[in-house]
Image (cartoon, rainbow, N blue to C red; front, side, top):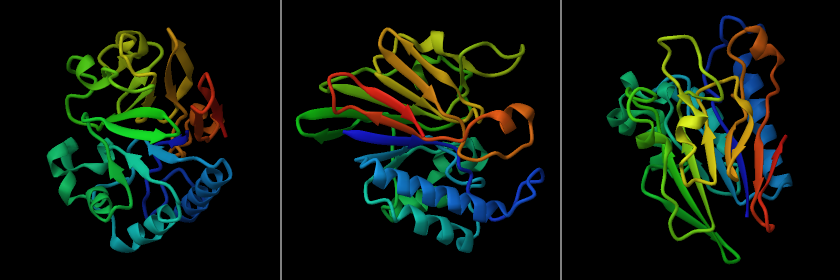
Length: 244
């Protein structure tokens, strides 16, 4: 089984202040490239880490352009809501957002704490997700980041939270990888932090954030980082992770 993961593409109909290009057209080009990568890499599933849209209810014309690209994926797409996908960071508003609408149409599938099981050639993968909410990175971290692995070969958990390798400034809300290293997930795939972080492996468990698919600012670190997707190959005796 092969999976492609990317996150935070922030679909929108206008260009951010710090970009000189036609952002919507650039993003459409990038998304078409991701579709092509998924086909060339022969992935079985596409995973998305949230902030699917830049606002909860973008114009229908904007949505149509982007969703037409997503319909070109010839495999299921699983995602979670990010903070930009919700009104007031309230998960209860999801049904009246454009992401909720796309899910009702079957263009994407929304993940929650209830596991979804994917199977191929005797391999069973447990898939869960935790979308953004107001208490993210504030309450007990285990409630959002830690999962139990059950009746599967691999467990993958996708979370839209500020997962980091090292501490930020005092008063910031974030979660350190070391705080959740007791999770039973074989792969914790994070979004929200646009800069991403180097792949981290603790006791054979992967913690991955490739960074956002788009650059929304001209911050020096943002300009230097690569824009990439992750390929996770579970078909061999050991998992293989590749960035493209």
